[in-house]
Length: 482
Image (cartoon, rainbow, N blue to C red; front, side, top):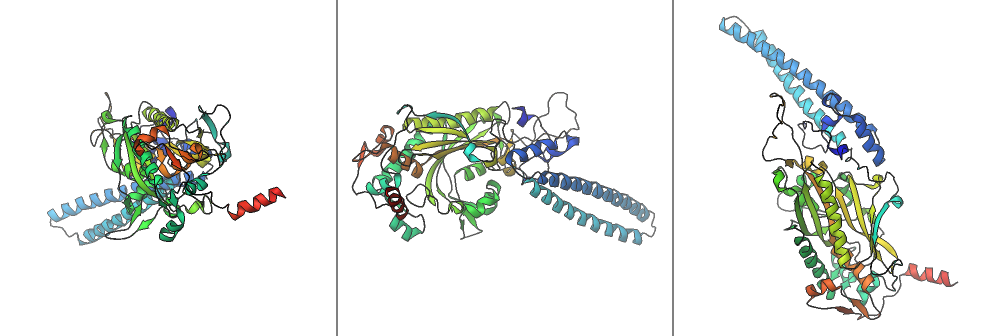
């Protein structure tokens, strides 16, 4: 994977940027073409790369200008000192040097502003895209990597009732009262719905613990400036809830990935301790602004839900993070295989990747009444993109040792860990999938692996008739009969 690891250059002074600015500097061994390629694969405007390069040139020229002014200031100070020692008049020189000092201060302030502008441009460039990612801008062209359908052979099952019907028929959810109390997409989970939800959580956490993951229950909200280091700008508008109270503003988490990424903020991580694997449990909160009108019924897409997240910290060396990536998606697959849920794993096209992901695999489970695959898992390798912003460094101290024969005057190299995230189970979504796949004529069977976590309960009976079909479905049915 030399495409990602061939440069080991000195990090710039900014901690806000997700890329090392030296990778864009030809005199430091950088190659601007790599960044044009990022933009090409992501179907993004390559002009932002030129903006970064020009802003950086201006910033470096400003440093040279300030160095010249400081040189003049030092020389003038020496002359002033000599004149004072000789008891010669130097008031004019002192006044001029004072003005020069003020000018230097102004130029230094301008330098900070120029660095901030350059780094703001740099934030507009997403992560490097792995060579195995299909280069396309249409998610219809996501690449199917593999499928699992061991229980049913080649033909996928089809069932009568969808998850919206089933939560009603089994009396697992009350969305009517939930929407009164909590607003749109609000719900009360009740009866066996609670038990099934808790069973998924307990089984999921046990499942990952057996595979070497350390359980973590994270905070449900984060300080605004910490969240800004973990989330993309678009998430603040489309996804995150802002809360006010004592102290500054805070944001409710959309996933435990966010606080888990911040857990090692400003740390040096000992290479001997890598990889670190965390199983994060939390309630998650999402505004779902971008999904207005989609999945308005049931509990598949809601504003509040529970989720178990895999979060891993890996070495940037020796291909470790890609080996961890393979292990994370394998863990998710084994989890749904144990539930005997048919699924497929798809490789998301480059144009649909979020800025942080170098590669993303989704596990899409089969919903036999909806007769479609739906995403239950997303697994991403973010390389050092997140770690740079959070200053999560790779090593045992503030300095990385130079190799034998290195120049004594050479600056120390700063390296960053790689960060990866993957859903194991968003329980409300997984619950919907289980209901559709395990339904019978009289109710819903409980997956065998979940029964010990439900006090041995193996069956959830129907206690209500199917709900009336929505108006749109009635019209479609009448049109089909005509």
